[in-house]
Length: 90
Image 1: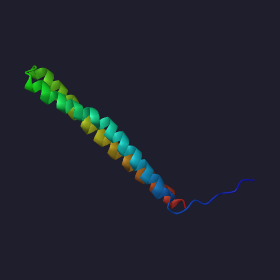
Image 2 (image 1 turned 120 degrees about the vertical axis):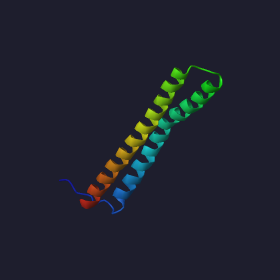
Image 3 (image 1 turned 180 degrees about the vertical axis):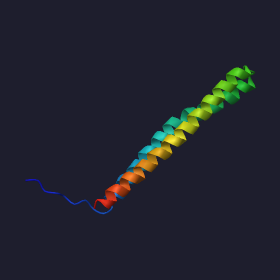
Image 4 (image 1 turned 120 degrees about the horizontal axis):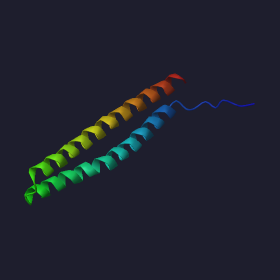
């Protein structure tokens, strides 16, 4: 015999807040290498490294930043969907 325990009304909101916090931390962790690449590109430009190398590193920096941002937005959208679904099930 199992009992169904009713969760409090704020439970979906707390789950969403936790997901936002964790997602933000992951976003920062993945975004930090892009910032590091930016500093590296500016340093390498200053010492006169080949423009091809600078171009490749700049492309990687932008690709990493854009991909990180898009995946963060998708993560938040899925979190909102799950929170609304959980809220509707109450």
